[in-house]
Every structure is written in C-alpha cells, then in structure tokens.
Length: 565
Image 1 (cartoon, helix red, strand yellow):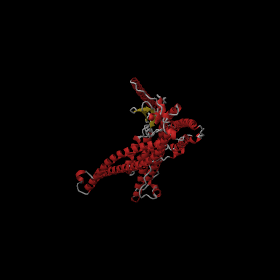
Image 2: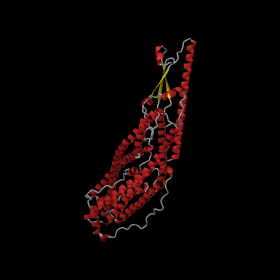
Image 3: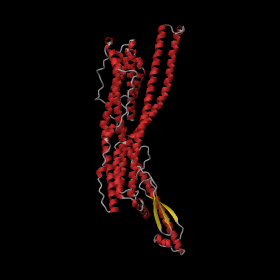
Image 4: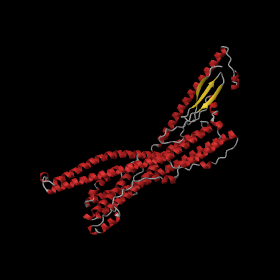
C-alpha cells in the first residue's frame, strides 16, 4: 500500500462568494471524490447597507472531468425530492411578492437617511440654543440694570432726560423679548426634532423586522436553487435574466426613492400652505383685539397661536427642501425661510403697533403665496416627470423578473422529468409579479410637522370673535391684496439627472463592475486549470518513474479489490 495524499481542487461555484472544496484522496491509483460545501448565505436581491453578492454574467464549462464529477455527485441532489423542492420554490416566491409590495428595502434606506439628517440638525440646534440662552441672559441683565438705575438717583448721570431713559428702557425690553422669543422658538424646534428622531427610529425597527423576514425568504430561495442546480446556473438564459433583473431593480430603486421623497414633500408643502393661511388669518385677528388691559392675555394667546402655526410651516418647508435635494426649490428657498424665521422672532414686538403688524403680515402672506406655488410645482413634477418613468421601469422590472421565474420553473420541470420521469404541473399564475402595491404605497404614513397647541386657550376662537365684535369702532379689517401670484407660470421642472441621479452612468458602472468580476473569475478559472494540469503531469511523471523502477501500479478496480490488496 502506498502512502495516501490529499489535494484540494477549487470548483467553479454558482456564486462568487461561495467556495466548493473538492478533496481528492489518492491511494495508487484509485481516486475517490467527495464534496464539502460550507454554509454560505447568498443575497439575490440588492439590500441597503448589506454587502451584496454580484452575480457572474457568464457560465463557464467545467475545465476538467473531476469538476463535472464533483458537481454531479453533490450529496444534496441524492437525498432531496425535486418535486417538493419546486413546489417550495413557488410558494416562497408568492410570499416574497406580497412582502415586496410593501417596498421595504427602499423605505428602510429612506428612513435611515431621514434620521441621520434629523440628528445632524438636532446637534446644530443644540449649539445654537446654548448661544441663545447666553444672549437672553445678557439682555435680561441689561433690563435689570436699567430697572435698578430707575430706582436710584443716578439716572441724571447717564441720561439727559427721563424721555431718553424711557426710550432706552423700551429698547432694552424689546431686545430681551426678541432674544427670549428666539430662544423659545429654537427650543421648540429642538424638542420637535428629538421627538421626530425617536419616531423614525421606531419606524426603522418595525420596517427592519419585516425586511429581515424578506431577506430570510431570499436566502431560502437561493438554497432551493442550490439544491436543484447544484450551485451553478441552470442555463445561460437564467444567468442573463438575473443580471438584467439586478440592473433594472437598481434603477427602479432610485426612481422609487425619488417618488417617495417628492410625494412626502408634496404633503408637507400642502400642510405648510394651510398652516400659513391660518397664521395670516389669526394675525389679522390680533389687530382687531382691543389693547385694553382685560384683553392683553387674549392678544398674547392669539400671537402665540400665530407663532406656533408659522413655526410648523417653516419646519414643513425646510423638510421639503431636504427631501427634494439635490434639486433646489424655486420657491420658499433657505433665504426666504430665514426671512420668515426673523419675522417669527420679532412677532411679539410686531404685535404692539399697527405699522409693524402690517409689515409682518406682508411677510407671512408672501410666504403663503410662495408655498402655494411650491406645492403646485411639486405636483407638476410628480405628474409629468416621475410618474411616467416610474410606471415604465416598474413594468420592465416586473416583466424581466417574471421571465426569470418562468425560466427557473422551466428548468425545474426538466429536472423533475429527468429525475423522476414525471411531468410536473405548475400553475405559474400563482407567482405572477404584480409589482408595488399602489394602495400600500399611497397609504404609507407621511409625518408632517403639527402645530403646538396654546396653553390655557380653551374656546380661543369664541373669545377672539367676541373681542372683535366689541372693537368694531377701532377700524376695519386688513384687506387682502387683490393681486395673487399666477400658477400658470411655474418654474421649469428639474432634469432627470437632478431627480434620480445619473442613471446612465450608474448602469455603465454596474456593467463595468460585472466585466471586471467576470475577468477576475476567468483568471481564477485559468489558474485552477493550470494548477490541476500541473498536478496531473506530476502524477504521470511519478507513475513513469515507478514503472521504470519495476514497481507495478494496480488498476482502479474499486474499494473491494483495494482492500484485498
């Protein structure tokens, strides 16, 4: 008996991430081939933030007879019931289609980005709030110093007259009110962002649970395909269809994310428009409320309610800008929102006099008109740009994926016929691809910024109407300007590259990656062939040397004769 030796041979796998180790044990010269396959998880669908296995776009013929033997003798194909496995494949696809209608992968990615942007904004607001708190303390101290001076006899040392002192005191009071209002507004925004981040985190957890169920089903489908086809593609057509499906799916993912972002922006902009409209109306009411002492608290409550509606509108418009980025909004841009924020910071001061009240109203009304234009512009972009591309891409993806499933079912039928001699009857309509469920898509929650309620303001509307009725002699209501911006002259829509990114470049990069991976696989295959041929050459050389020395090499007559020897 000669000494046993072991040689590891690499077999071309179905997936690049899979390694099939073929161990050949040689005992002069019988060759026994066994296959051991590690447990490898395959992701057949693109998943956000999960390393994705790229599929080789070409099937290679086995380079040597030993490779064919290794693949053909995989133990999985000996013990499985092909017919049952095919039925399981069909059932898994039906469940997958139901989950895919929820668009889970895209929604998880969208929510993760939204939470990251919210957290970044919260960090910035925390720093701003700290600065505003210091500013408020300083302004309060300035007011306190003047009050202390008024109670002393040192006014004449700093002011020429009581009138000059009163003017300075009023100025310091206004600066303190403005600083305090700005601080409170910043604090309210920060709290709202923190609550939004917590809500988004909860949504991500729920979506991830469903997404993980989907990924588990993908893994089960890949295991079924491995069992049926032994780790290689059933046909070249299956390989090509899978690659094409991956490409269209990536394009579809981009467009779906754009659609969801723009639909959310549309809802937020419409909410902001309604909030600005109410703020303008309530701001009219403020001027009609008597300024006598008994109505002072009512005026403060009305101004506070106006401010809360304006803050909510600003948040919704800011979220809209973030959602449609990198496209720049032609209306209510950051500069306009900054102007509105400044007006909000002065709102309690603006409510004291008619002139300032009228000026502030013009700012609010102009922003309301621009917000209405923005809502109409977003609606037009969705209808004329995104919807068409999304519908076409969904149809292409559904057709391509259905073709892939049909090809796999055809191959499985052939496998059943080859294995059992029976014809498998499969109803392919059970796995027909209906695409994204539009009802589920439209029913997806869109969280708009809500208005904070005014404390201790029960029956506020009734109180304001009563106060206005008692103040008819104070003057007429403020008239709304007759000229309104026309919706017929909207800004031009963004380009496809601005909406979806450069899809042509994306597809080119994808194809380039596929070609690079294919080249790498060819090089690996060539090295494996060369190594195996070299091992065969060495074995032949050893056999020739042994024969030259007069040592007979017994033929391979199986384990029984080997044992007898």
